Length: 105
Image 1 (cartoon, rainbow, N blue to C red):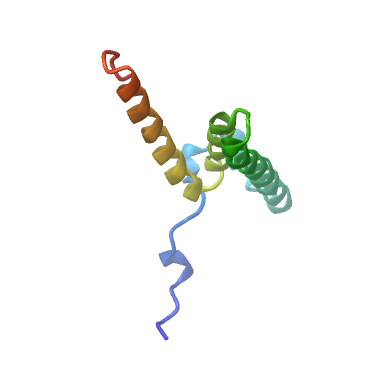
Image 2: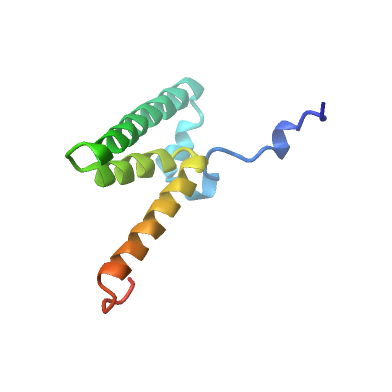
């Protein structure tokens, strides 16, 4: 088996402190409150993302909920930024194919 990786060598799952608002950085002084906040963000973002996935095959605003859920998750969890970025790029490409004469913002 390979050597265990040190905790400092693992990629962080949260955004750097420089990207957080001031109130969010001050929340770090209260570990229980910070944990509760992260759980809340994870729960709300997870529910919206799951509902968006379900509504992709059922009638409803599936893509909008998927965007919203991933955007909420990405505010706290760095791993959620990657699928959000992919989804955003995919939407831009689709829009460009549907309307090739419009400029990209």
